[in-house]
Length: 407
Ligand code: DNO
Image 1 (cartoon, rainbow, N blue to C red):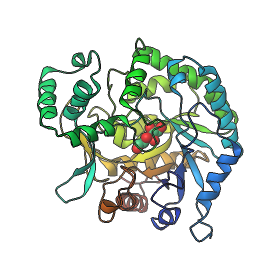
Image 2: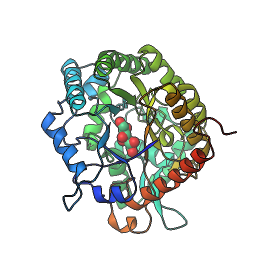
Image 3: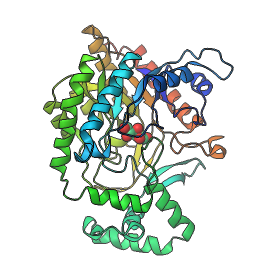
Image 4: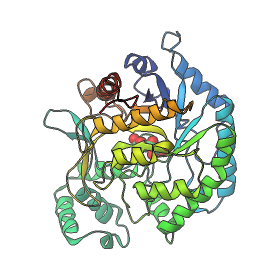
Protein backbone atom coordinates (compact mmCIF):
# COMPACT_ATOMS: atom_id res chain seq x y z
CA UNK A 1 0.00 0.00 0.00
CA UNK A 2 1.12 3.51 -0.65
CA UNK A 3 0.90 5.36 2.66
CA UNK A 4 -0.86 8.66 2.10
CA UNK A 5 -2.21 11.42 4.34
CA UNK A 6 -5.21 13.69 3.99
CA UNK A 7 -4.39 17.40 3.80
CA UNK A 8 -7.11 20.05 3.75
CA UNK A 9 -4.92 22.69 2.11
CA UNK A 10 -3.08 25.74 3.43
CA UNK A 11 -5.60 26.27 6.26
CA UNK A 12 -4.94 22.79 7.64
CA UNK A 13 -3.29 22.98 11.07
CA UNK A 14 -1.11 20.05 10.05
CA UNK A 15 1.63 21.23 7.69
CA UNK A 16 3.16 19.46 4.72
CA UNK A 17 6.36 19.30 6.81
CA UNK A 18 4.48 17.34 9.50
CA UNK A 19 3.10 14.93 6.91
CA UNK A 20 6.57 14.29 5.61
CA UNK A 21 7.86 13.66 9.12
CA UNK A 22 4.99 11.26 9.80
CA UNK A 23 6.50 9.16 7.04
CA UNK A 24 3.65 9.54 4.57
CA UNK A 25 4.53 8.85 0.96
CA UNK A 26 1.78 10.86 -0.70
CA UNK A 27 -1.06 13.31 -0.15
CA UNK A 28 -4.83 13.16 -0.47
CA UNK A 29 -6.47 16.53 -0.99
CA UNK A 30 -9.33 18.46 -2.57
CA UNK A 31 -10.18 22.00 -3.63
CA UNK A 32 -12.58 22.53 -0.76
CA UNK A 33 -13.12 26.17 -1.69
CA UNK A 34 -14.69 25.33 -5.06
CA UNK A 35 -18.47 24.89 -4.82
CA UNK A 36 -19.89 21.55 -5.93
CA UNK A 37 -21.09 21.70 -9.51
CA UNK A 38 -18.27 24.05 -10.54
CA UNK A 39 -15.25 23.18 -12.67
CA UNK A 40 -11.86 22.68 -11.00
CA UNK A 41 -9.58 24.83 -13.11
CA UNK A 42 -6.04 23.89 -14.18
CA UNK A 43 -4.74 26.96 -12.29
CA UNK A 44 -6.30 25.92 -8.98
CA UNK A 45 -5.17 22.31 -9.41
CA UNK A 46 -1.60 23.39 -10.17
CA UNK A 47 -1.64 25.71 -7.16
CA UNK A 48 -2.57 22.87 -4.81
CA UNK A 49 0.09 20.64 -6.37
CA UNK A 50 2.71 23.34 -5.78
CA UNK A 51 1.59 23.74 -2.15
CA UNK A 52 1.96 20.02 -1.58
CA UNK A 53 5.35 19.96 -3.26
CA UNK A 54 7.01 22.43 -0.87
CA UNK A 55 7.95 22.52 2.79
CA UNK A 56 7.77 25.70 4.88
CA UNK A 57 11.36 26.67 4.07
CA UNK A 58 10.72 26.26 0.35
CA UNK A 59 12.63 23.00 -0.04
CA UNK A 60 10.95 20.17 -1.97
CA UNK A 61 8.69 17.98 0.15
CA UNK A 62 9.10 14.96 -2.08
CA UNK A 63 5.32 14.52 -1.79
CA UNK A 64 2.75 14.69 -4.55
CA UNK A 65 -1.04 14.93 -4.71
CA UNK A 66 -1.97 11.29 -5.33
CA UNK A 67 -5.68 11.06 -4.62
CA UNK A 68 -8.56 13.51 -4.95
CA UNK A 69 -10.90 13.25 -1.96
CA UNK A 70 -13.46 14.34 -2.86
CA UNK A 71 -14.54 15.62 -6.21
CA UNK A 72 -18.00 16.39 -4.84
CA UNK A 73 -21.20 15.31 -6.51
CA UNK A 74 -23.79 18.08 -6.27
CA UNK A 75 -27.18 17.66 -4.61
CA UNK A 76 -28.71 18.45 -8.03
CA UNK A 77 -26.97 15.43 -9.55
CA UNK A 78 -28.04 13.24 -6.64
CA UNK A 79 -31.67 14.30 -7.10
CA UNK A 80 -31.53 14.75 -10.89
CA UNK A 81 -33.09 18.15 -10.53
CA UNK A 82 -32.21 21.70 -11.54
CA UNK A 83 -28.87 22.16 -13.31
CA UNK A 84 -27.81 18.54 -12.88
CA UNK A 85 -26.82 18.04 -16.52
CA UNK A 86 -24.58 21.11 -16.36
CA UNK A 87 -23.07 19.76 -13.17
CA UNK A 88 -22.28 16.44 -14.83
CA UNK A 89 -20.64 18.32 -17.71
CA UNK A 90 -18.62 20.31 -15.15
CA UNK A 91 -17.65 17.08 -13.37
CA UNK A 92 -16.29 15.63 -16.62
CA UNK A 93 -14.39 18.82 -17.29
CA UNK A 94 -12.84 18.70 -13.83
CA UNK A 95 -11.80 15.10 -14.52
CA UNK A 96 -10.08 16.20 -17.73
CA UNK A 97 -8.21 18.96 -15.93
CA UNK A 98 -7.18 16.61 -13.14
CA UNK A 99 -5.99 13.99 -15.61
CA UNK A 100 -3.94 16.62 -17.45
CA UNK A 101 -2.26 17.36 -14.12
CA UNK A 102 -1.47 13.66 -13.61
CA UNK A 103 -4.16 12.89 -11.00
CA UNK A 104 -5.68 9.49 -11.52
CA UNK A 105 -7.68 8.45 -8.44
CA UNK A 106 -10.94 10.21 -7.66
CA UNK A 107 -12.88 9.55 -4.45
CA UNK A 108 -16.46 10.79 -4.12
CA UNK A 109 -19.58 9.91 -2.20
CA UNK A 110 -23.29 9.81 -2.92
CA UNK A 111 -24.69 10.57 0.52
CA UNK A 112 -27.64 12.91 0.32
CA UNK A 113 -27.43 16.18 2.26
CA UNK A 114 -25.05 15.16 5.04
CA UNK A 115 -21.62 13.70 4.46
CA UNK A 116 -20.28 12.03 7.61
CA UNK A 117 -22.03 12.75 10.88
CA UNK A 118 -21.27 12.46 14.59
CA UNK A 119 -22.84 13.63 17.85
CA UNK A 120 -19.58 14.14 19.78
CA UNK A 121 -16.31 15.52 18.46
CA UNK A 122 -14.28 15.24 21.67
CA UNK A 123 -15.60 12.31 23.63
CA UNK A 124 -13.33 11.57 26.58
CA UNK A 125 -11.86 8.10 26.84
CA UNK A 126 -10.62 6.63 30.14
CA UNK A 127 -7.03 7.50 29.14
CA UNK A 128 -7.89 11.19 28.75
CA UNK A 129 -7.59 10.95 24.96
CA UNK A 130 -10.67 12.10 23.05
CA UNK A 131 -12.38 10.67 20.01
CA UNK A 132 -15.42 11.14 17.83
CA UNK A 133 -18.62 9.37 18.70
CA UNK A 134 -22.04 8.72 17.25
CA UNK A 135 -24.53 8.30 20.04
CA UNK A 136 -27.84 7.19 18.59
CA UNK A 137 -29.82 8.55 21.54
CA UNK A 138 -28.35 12.04 21.16
CA UNK A 139 -28.80 11.91 17.41
CA UNK A 140 -32.47 11.10 17.88
CA UNK A 141 -32.73 13.93 20.43
CA UNK A 142 -31.35 16.25 17.74
CA UNK A 143 -33.81 14.96 15.16
CA UNK A 144 -36.88 15.14 17.42
CA UNK A 145 -36.28 18.21 19.56
CA UNK A 146 -33.78 20.47 17.76
CA UNK A 147 -34.45 19.85 14.09
CA UNK A 148 -38.09 18.89 14.82
CA UNK A 149 -38.28 16.96 11.56
CA UNK A 150 -41.84 16.16 10.56
CA UNK A 151 -42.48 12.44 10.93
CA UNK A 152 -39.20 11.86 12.80
CA UNK A 153 -40.98 9.80 15.46
CA UNK A 154 -41.82 7.12 12.89
CA UNK A 155 -38.11 6.50 12.25
CA UNK A 156 -37.27 5.15 15.70
CA UNK A 157 -38.40 2.49 18.14
CA UNK A 158 -40.20 3.64 21.33
CA UNK A 159 -37.28 2.75 23.65
CA UNK A 160 -34.90 5.00 21.73
CA UNK A 161 -37.44 7.83 21.63
CA UNK A 162 -37.90 7.56 25.38
CA UNK A 163 -34.13 7.60 25.98
CA UNK A 164 -33.74 10.57 23.64
CA UNK A 165 -36.49 12.48 25.45
CA UNK A 166 -34.70 11.92 28.76
CA UNK A 167 -31.31 12.77 27.31
CA UNK A 168 -32.56 16.04 25.79
CA UNK A 169 -34.22 17.08 29.05
CA UNK A 170 -30.88 16.60 30.83
CA UNK A 171 -28.81 18.59 28.30
CA UNK A 172 -27.85 22.15 29.17
CA UNK A 173 -28.01 24.86 26.52
CA UNK A 174 -24.32 24.57 25.75
CA UNK A 175 -24.65 20.87 24.95
CA UNK A 176 -27.77 21.48 22.86
CA UNK A 177 -25.93 24.08 20.77
CA UNK A 178 -22.89 21.86 20.47
CA UNK A 179 -25.00 18.90 19.37
CA UNK A 180 -26.80 20.99 16.80
CA UNK A 181 -23.56 22.32 15.37
CA UNK A 182 -21.89 18.93 15.38
CA UNK A 183 -24.64 17.22 13.44
CA UNK A 184 -25.70 19.96 11.06
CA UNK A 185 -22.80 22.27 10.40
CA UNK A 186 -20.62 19.84 8.55
CA UNK A 187 -17.39 18.08 9.42
CA UNK A 188 -14.05 18.50 7.65
CA UNK A 189 -14.33 17.75 3.98
CA UNK A 190 -18.11 18.15 3.91
CA UNK A 191 -19.13 20.40 1.11
CA UNK A 192 -21.73 22.48 2.89
CA UNK A 193 -21.88 24.15 6.28
CA UNK A 194 -25.60 24.02 6.94
CA UNK A 195 -27.85 26.01 9.23
CA UNK A 196 -30.87 24.22 10.69
CA UNK A 197 -33.12 25.98 8.20
CA UNK A 198 -30.87 24.95 5.27
CA UNK A 199 -31.00 21.43 6.55
CA UNK A 200 -34.82 21.45 6.71
CA UNK A 201 -35.05 22.78 3.14
CA UNK A 202 -32.58 20.22 1.84
CA UNK A 203 -34.30 17.36 3.61
CA UNK A 204 -37.61 18.43 2.11
CA UNK A 205 -36.02 18.42 -1.35
CA UNK A 206 -35.56 14.64 -0.97
CA UNK A 207 -39.24 14.02 -0.31
CA UNK A 208 -40.32 11.32 -2.70
CA UNK A 209 -36.77 10.19 -3.54
CA UNK A 210 -36.71 6.52 -2.64
CA UNK A 211 -33.71 4.29 -2.12
CA UNK A 212 -34.24 2.82 -5.61
CA UNK A 213 -34.45 6.25 -7.19
CA UNK A 214 -31.28 7.46 -5.50
CA UNK A 215 -29.47 4.29 -6.59
CA UNK A 216 -30.60 4.71 -10.16
CA UNK A 217 -29.45 8.36 -10.06
CA UNK A 218 -26.02 7.17 -8.91
CA UNK A 219 -25.91 4.62 -11.71
CA UNK A 220 -26.91 7.27 -14.27
CA UNK A 221 -24.15 9.53 -12.96
CA UNK A 222 -21.58 6.73 -13.21
CA UNK A 223 -22.74 5.70 -16.67
CA UNK A 224 -21.83 9.25 -17.74
CA UNK A 225 -18.57 9.85 -15.90
CA UNK A 226 -16.89 6.43 -15.62
CA UNK A 227 -16.33 6.05 -19.40
CA UNK A 228 -14.73 9.51 -19.39
CA UNK A 229 -12.52 8.53 -16.47
CA UNK A 230 -11.61 5.33 -18.31
CA UNK A 231 -10.57 7.23 -21.45
CA UNK A 232 -8.44 9.48 -19.29
CA UNK A 233 -6.77 6.56 -17.50
CA UNK A 234 -8.42 7.49 -14.18
CA UNK A 235 -10.20 5.44 -11.52
CA UNK A 236 -13.29 6.52 -9.61
CA UNK A 237 -13.93 5.15 -6.12
CA UNK A 238 -17.10 5.60 -4.13
CA UNK A 239 -16.82 6.22 -0.39
CA UNK A 240 -19.35 4.38 1.78
CA UNK A 241 -22.07 6.04 3.80
CA UNK A 242 -20.91 7.15 7.23
CA UNK A 243 -22.60 5.95 9.34
CA UNK A 244 -23.81 3.15 7.07
CA UNK A 245 -27.53 3.37 7.71
CA UNK A 246 -30.33 5.81 6.77
CA UNK A 247 -30.37 9.10 8.69
CA UNK A 248 -33.04 11.80 9.05
CA UNK A 249 -35.35 9.85 6.77
CA UNK A 250 -32.89 10.08 3.88
CA UNK A 251 -32.04 7.06 1.76
CA UNK A 252 -28.49 5.66 1.98
CA UNK A 253 -27.32 3.41 -0.84
CA UNK A 254 -23.62 2.60 -0.27
CA UNK A 255 -23.67 0.98 3.15
CA UNK A 256 -22.94 -2.72 2.60
CA UNK A 257 -21.46 -5.29 0.24
CA UNK A 258 -24.67 -5.80 -1.66
CA UNK A 259 -25.00 -2.04 -2.30
CA UNK A 260 -21.51 -2.00 -3.80
CA UNK A 261 -22.13 -5.14 -5.82
CA UNK A 262 -25.24 -3.69 -7.44
CA UNK A 263 -23.51 -0.47 -8.43
CA UNK A 264 -20.33 -2.22 -9.63
CA UNK A 265 -22.38 -4.57 -11.80
CA UNK A 266 -24.60 -1.81 -13.19
CA UNK A 267 -21.59 0.01 -14.63
CA UNK A 268 -19.29 -2.91 -15.11
CA UNK A 269 -15.94 -1.26 -15.77
CA UNK A 270 -12.82 -1.57 -13.60
CA UNK A 271 -12.72 2.23 -13.35
CA UNK A 272 -16.02 2.12 -11.47
CA UNK A 273 -14.48 1.35 -8.11
CA UNK A 274 -14.57 1.43 -4.35
CA UNK A 275 -13.03 3.42 -1.52
CA UNK A 276 -12.84 0.71 1.12
CA UNK A 277 -13.34 2.66 4.35
CA UNK A 278 -13.05 0.18 7.19
CA UNK A 279 -14.27 2.76 9.70
CA UNK A 280 -17.51 3.58 7.90
CA UNK A 281 -18.38 0.05 6.82
CA UNK A 282 -17.14 -1.44 10.11
CA UNK A 283 -19.99 0.18 12.04
CA UNK A 284 -22.26 -2.59 10.77
CA UNK A 285 -21.65 -6.00 12.26
CA UNK A 286 -22.96 -7.61 9.06
CA UNK A 287 -20.20 -6.02 6.97
CA UNK A 288 -17.39 -8.56 6.63
CA UNK A 289 -14.51 -6.25 5.70
CA UNK A 290 -11.96 -8.97 4.97
CA UNK A 291 -14.52 -10.86 2.88
CA UNK A 292 -15.38 -7.69 0.97
CA UNK A 293 -11.70 -7.19 0.22
CA UNK A 294 -11.46 -10.76 -1.05
CA UNK A 295 -14.61 -10.60 -3.15
CA UNK A 296 -14.54 -7.00 -4.42
CA UNK A 297 -10.81 -6.26 -4.05
CA UNK A 298 -10.35 -6.03 -7.79
CA UNK A 299 -12.33 -2.76 -7.73
CA UNK A 300 -10.77 -1.26 -4.61
CA UNK A 301 -8.78 1.79 -5.74
CA UNK A 302 -8.36 3.60 -2.42
CA UNK A 303 -8.39 2.52 1.22
CA UNK A 304 -9.19 4.28 4.50
CA UNK A 305 -7.96 2.31 7.50
CA UNK A 306 -9.80 3.17 10.70
CA UNK A 307 -11.53 1.25 13.46
CA UNK A 308 -14.73 1.69 15.41
CA UNK A 309 -16.15 0.16 18.56
CA UNK A 310 -19.86 -0.55 18.43
CA UNK A 311 -21.61 0.37 21.66
CA UNK A 312 -25.02 -1.08 20.86
CA UNK A 313 -26.27 -3.86 18.62
CA UNK A 314 -28.42 -3.55 15.51
CA UNK A 315 -28.98 -0.71 13.11
CA UNK A 316 -28.91 2.15 13.63
CA UNK A 317 -26.45 1.85 16.50
CA UNK A 318 -24.08 3.89 18.64
CA UNK A 319 -20.32 3.69 18.17
CA UNK A 320 -17.10 5.55 18.80
CA UNK A 321 -13.84 5.76 16.92
CA UNK A 322 -11.37 3.31 18.41
CA UNK A 323 -7.61 3.07 18.03
CA UNK A 324 -6.57 1.84 14.60
CA UNK A 325 -5.75 -1.67 15.80
CA UNK A 326 -8.52 -1.74 18.42
CA UNK A 327 -12.25 -1.78 17.78
CA UNK A 328 -14.44 -4.34 16.07
CA UNK A 329 -12.54 -4.72 12.78
CA UNK A 330 -9.75 -7.27 12.69
CA UNK A 331 -7.25 -4.88 11.11
CA UNK A 332 -4.45 -7.43 10.80
CA UNK A 333 -6.67 -9.77 8.83
CA UNK A 334 -7.95 -6.95 6.61
CA UNK A 335 -4.41 -5.78 5.86
CA UNK A 336 -3.43 -9.32 4.98
CA UNK A 337 -6.29 -9.51 2.46
CA UNK A 338 -5.23 -6.17 0.96
CA UNK A 339 -1.61 -7.32 0.61
CA UNK A 340 -2.80 -10.49 -1.09
CA UNK A 341 -4.84 -8.43 -3.57
CA UNK A 342 -1.78 -6.30 -4.27
CA UNK A 343 0.32 -9.42 -4.87
CA UNK A 344 -2.32 -10.74 -7.26
CA UNK A 345 -2.31 -7.47 -9.23
CA UNK A 346 1.47 -7.45 -9.34
CA UNK A 347 1.52 -10.98 -10.72
CA UNK A 348 -0.91 -9.88 -13.43
CA UNK A 349 1.40 -7.01 -14.32
CA UNK A 350 -1.16 -4.39 -13.30
CA UNK A 351 0.31 -0.95 -12.74
CA UNK A 352 -2.22 -0.17 -10.00
CA UNK A 353 -0.97 -2.79 -7.55
CA UNK A 354 0.26 -0.26 -4.97
CA UNK A 355 -3.13 0.81 -3.60
CA UNK A 356 -3.09 4.19 -1.84
CA UNK A 357 -4.29 4.03 1.74
CA UNK A 358 -4.52 6.65 4.40
CA UNK A 359 -4.73 6.29 8.17
CA UNK A 360 -8.25 7.58 8.61
CA UNK A 361 -9.12 9.81 11.53
CA UNK A 362 -7.29 9.51 14.81
CA UNK A 363 -7.93 10.00 18.48
CA UNK A 364 -6.74 13.29 19.97
CA UNK A 365 -3.73 12.55 22.14
CA UNK A 366 -0.84 14.53 23.66
CA UNK A 367 -0.54 17.95 21.97
CA UNK A 368 -3.57 17.25 19.77
CA UNK A 369 -5.68 17.95 22.84
CA UNK A 370 -4.51 21.59 22.96
CA UNK A 371 -4.46 22.31 19.25
CA UNK A 372 -8.18 22.10 18.48
CA UNK A 373 -7.47 20.98 14.93
CA UNK A 374 -9.93 19.60 12.41
CA UNK A 375 -12.22 17.10 14.13
CA UNK A 376 -11.04 13.57 13.44
CA UNK A 377 -7.85 14.71 11.74
CA UNK A 378 -5.26 15.39 14.47
CA UNK A 379 -1.55 15.23 13.71
CA UNK A 380 -0.35 12.94 16.47
CA UNK A 381 -3.36 10.61 16.66
CA UNK A 382 -3.08 9.94 12.94
CA UNK A 383 0.68 9.63 13.11
CA UNK A 384 0.24 6.93 15.76
CA UNK A 385 -2.38 5.21 13.61
CA UNK A 386 -0.13 5.27 10.56
CA UNK A 387 2.81 3.95 12.57
CA UNK A 388 0.75 1.04 13.89
CA UNK A 389 -0.67 0.20 10.49
CA UNK A 390 2.78 0.44 8.90
CA UNK A 391 4.04 -1.97 11.53
CA UNK A 392 1.39 -4.53 10.60
CA UNK A 393 2.01 -4.05 6.88
CA UNK A 394 5.75 -4.48 7.30
CA UNK A 395 5.45 -7.52 9.54
CA UNK A 396 3.01 -9.29 7.24
CA UNK A 397 5.02 -8.45 4.12
CA UNK A 398 8.22 -9.74 5.64
CA UNK A 399 6.55 -12.98 6.59
CA UNK A 400 5.61 -13.52 2.97
CA UNK A 401 1.88 -12.82 3.13
CA UNK A 402 2.16 -10.21 0.44
CA UNK A 403 3.45 -12.72 -2.06
CA UNK A 404 0.81 -15.20 -1.07
CA UNK A 405 3.27 -17.59 0.52
CA UNK A 406 2.07 -17.03 4.07
CA UNK A 407 -0.18 -19.44 5.88
C1 DNO B 1 -14.58 11.60 6.70
C2 DNO B 1 -14.37 11.30 5.32
C3 DNO B 1 -15.50 11.68 4.38
C4 DNO B 1 -15.06 11.39 2.97
C5 DNO B 1 -16.10 11.62 1.93
C6 DNO B 1 -15.61 11.08 0.62
O1 DNO B 1 -13.66 11.58 7.45
O2 DNO B 1 -13.97 10.00 5.16
O3 DNO B 1 -15.78 13.04 4.51
O4 DNO B 1 -13.99 12.21 2.66
O5 DNO B 1 -17.29 11.06 2.28
O6 DNO B 1 -16.38 11.54 -0.41
